[in-house]
Length: 125
Image (cartoon, rainbow, N blue to C red; front, side, top):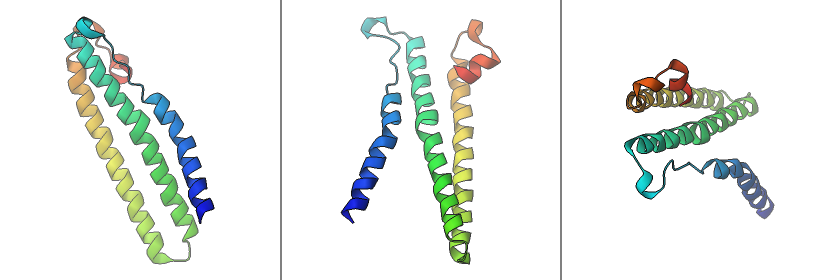
């Protein structure tokens, strides 16, 4: 039992290292140099980190877990149905998250000056 706990703790620590290094959300200004554009850039950095650094990996782990559950419970119909329901819930949650990302990104993007507005700028800003 302790070997399982130790192995799980080590695996969790190793898997969380990339998230910890990505958690360095850059603050675009320092003290009195801050402007409204710096605030918008900070909000954009936080949104990108939460979306691509946290939510996408969590959804991938959820898909992996549900897929393993479906494969391992191929004989049990109730477990298979539960896994399919969980898969649908993960997809729904991910789509809601993507929709919210587009809405918030559009609002943040509307504060950028007209000179910087391009479609590629919207996607990768």
